[in-house]
Amino acid sequence: MIQSAKTLSGSLELKAEVCVIGSGAGGAVVAKELAEAGRDVVLLEQGGYYTKEDFTQREEEMMPLLFEEMGQRSTEDGAILILQGRNIGGSTVHNLCYCFRTPRPIVEKWRREEGIVWTYEDLLPSFERVERMLHVQPIPEAQVNTLNRKIREGCEKLGFHGIVAHHNRVNCTSSGFCILGCPFDAKQSMALTYIPAADRAGARIFADCPVDRLETRGDRVTRVVGHVADAAGTVRGEVRVEAELVVLSAGAINSPQILLRSAVGGKGSTSIGKHLHLHPSVLLAGIYDEDIYGYLGIPQSYYVDEFIDLERNPDSGYIIMPIFGFPVATAAQLPGFGRTHARLMRSYHRMVGILVLLHDQSEGEVRLGSDGRPRIRYHLRPAEQALMAEGMRHCAEILFASGAREVVVPYHREPLWLKPGDDLFVIDRRGCRPGEIPLASTHPQGTCRMGEDPARAVVNSWGKSHELRNLFLADMGIFPSSLGAPPQITTAALADHIAHFIAAHWRKLVG
Image (cartoon, rainbow, N blue to C red):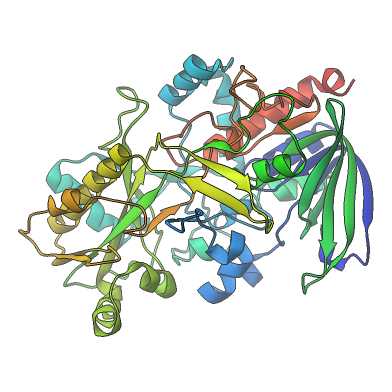
């Protein structure tokens, strides 16, 4: 049963063999696999539990429900917006369903640099289980919408390589509202797949139950402590879970926050919260003479990998992707004021959005804020600013090659309004400096990274804490580096791999 902690009248005391914190692509998988292995599992999720009846397709209603800080979480300087899920199912409820396995060269990099003991082949059973559970399949050609076809057309004319990707949707109606939660249950999020399976296997699942800290004694976690609040946010009591083993899967921003509040890290690794990678992205808009209706259909089906070659260089490159926002988000991204902005919005139905997503080597850090919110610092290296500007130029080339009559580069001051035949290297000269153009991230990662050296890593190759013998982590925070690909399948496969390790070594781990 999935229960909201808001319905509780006071404090709650629970005992379990396993307490899982977080219900996204990591926590949901761990909860399901361990419950099916016969373990007594309690799962705590800070956000609410929502179903298709709750997904109204309205931005002003869905953003507060589905996103951290109502979709306004950002780096400390406000330069990069960070979108993360806050609900049963985590970010899988609002993501756009790209499904890619971990790139083999990235696994080899992790083995080479951080001593990861397993191989790409060792992950294959986990990939297969996850893809089967999430119903991963190729996106049908008939569901490649006009926006994605325009980007493909431009790439083909320019000789840029791209593919129609795989996704995790079943009987998709092509409504286009994926980022606001699927009102038709086509998107096979964790809330529709792993969470119900965990529930059927006997896991006790609590929504609206934020975790504040871990209590420890010696080298063990003894209790998970959260709180109960009513609908108005008034704290009514504590939730205390005594568990033999704890799996922290609260995401790359919140997991280090919980560890830092719990004073974990004082005896070993100083890496908690550090090595933050963001996959920062920047978008451009092309305006066409014909109707595009970019908000209709699957938002992202085409995927341009011309500018990332992980076999040749696992430390550099960028991906180009289609993107389209609903009216409020689009209005916020577009430059200008008054009549200038109104002119752009009148072109909304003739607009194609396109973005550059960087495989970043730049790093940041998550710290504790005095107000309880995370302080997120991130510095985008000058060389990677230049690389993103190069990608922006290629985006403009793609848009013009597919018939755009105007391309908008949304610098805050003096945005560029480009026409066919203009010198596109003006983008390189202007650059991509944080604070001068809107940047966003949906893939924070690396803040509790895996590795065999406790001085460099927070957990080992199996997600086990170097400091606390009964603490595991399973979320994007454990990636040892930037992934360089959409992370949904990697996150779930690593969680599956970790859960099967825990199940196989249970007696040794809790003995």
